[in-house]
Length: 481
Image (cartoon, rainbow, N blue to C red; front, side, top):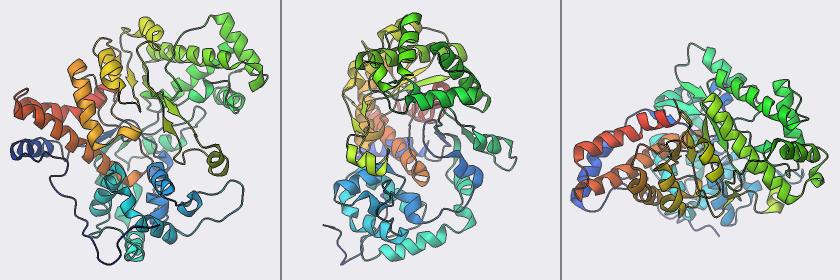
């Protein structure tokens, strides 16, 4: 049942000292550090905003389509509290059921507003609704319609179009995530448009070709070959097509790839063995055993690093996610609907073959992300603290929260300090939440650095420099921007 109190309106006014320590001395230092970076340009090297959104520059359809329906962070919490995905705007793939109007979707959010209390989603939303849309009351059943109308009217104004917001948000670089057969037409349009002064770069995500046990593997392999103009009927052909597609992405501004696999195993296969498994997999999923599919995937991860050494693309790796945990939801509503869940992470031994081959290769950058924060101090930090190629990716997805950012800094800094980290990763499809998410990270980092200052581990001057580097030259260097 909805639990929002509709009797009185609660003010919506994010506190200027949010996320800073209660101790007055530490809080004062955190303010100083935050002020040094509060208005710095946003560098977003990993996200999922569609480049066509910015290239087309059309008004957003309505508040729900912009702020609720595409955001799996929002969907999962509302679903957990009894709101069906169809009531949040996700179409039922079976063709049964209807999508409610945006106003009703917004009401569903407002009536369940308290279900977000204490979560980073609530934090982002409060900042976004106040700073971007000028709301002064917390959403509730009583004000849902008025707030919906306010935002809907605002979205029709020129200053709320995607390109105007790109400038207003202070975005310097925005990376998208793109399929291996994407034509990147929207990126080309933006690059050729003299009226657009921002930088939007593609990211090559091709991990769908790594796993021959996927039901769509043959289709994806064929599409890569078609896009590259290379026959992918052999494993050597697939590797050649992937190299060609990587070069195509580089020509369109890409500096990185993104890879999500179940585990970080990277043991290479012999040319004859990977060719044999590839040929068998082309006969259908039943053509390979589960063990052969895993061996093929591990070899592909090794080949991916090999390609990065050759062409210079940064390799982002985020293993350990159990995709589409609830099969009935996947069948009804498709992927990215909130039921991808964390698994146990491991890097040190699984990545050993890859790192022995490439961990000291000049120019190779491997950014490791995890949804299992127990590996930050045990594995990722120490790996980044030895291998020149390894960088400790920021807390991501289930752990991109204020508290987890502090734990990440504490876990990583002892082993690898700040320069071998990634900078903040917003990983979002929710365009208007980007400034709120980056502001949260800047505050959390200011709070952590302030704790080092007041315990006399670093000087305030050094802390200011580090805070500025975390949002500027560190992500630029890590992602070769």
